[in-house]
Image (cartoon, rainbow, N blue to C red; front, top):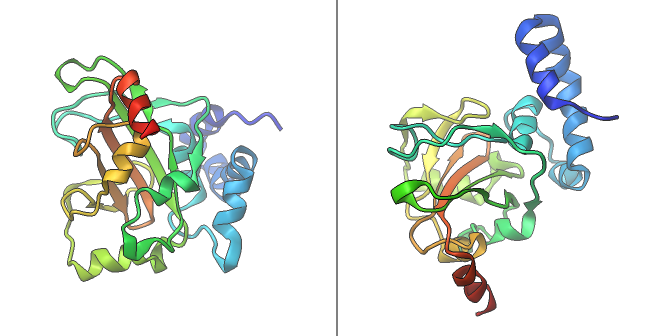
Length: 214
């Protein structure tokens, strides 16, 4: 089937009945069609996508949320937009996991590049999803650290509360290397349902290639 997620979203806004069908059936089928191997892995071992919902996951697969001034990423303003295709990688996700949490499974997207953003330089927005976040070591660590939720902002995909991983000192240098970003420029949030949204300042292409070769 040739899925049109934009049309599903539009019809869901104008028809309550269609919205219910989309939530229960269409978004689930779309996710399986869009990323079959990823969905199979997220469901393996008795796990299932009750972390959030299929509509939220479908949106995460195809939508770069960007950011607004005064929002999650201070004064940066980049409008959100649909993304034709994005690669999500479990291997990339390992670069974001602290050593005690290496058994967790995290899929992270390639950065969505927004170049020449004035003083901010070249920005890369990324997103991701944890498998079984409710029982993950990352969530356990956040709870043990008594991490506080963001006081105002919610997850753009499911409206759940957000933890700031930069604030909790849980961002690794390996994440910067993986994204081709400057050290200490990576910032990301994880919501209660395991959705990841983040930003980084990208290295010039020649510099990032050299970093990858080291």
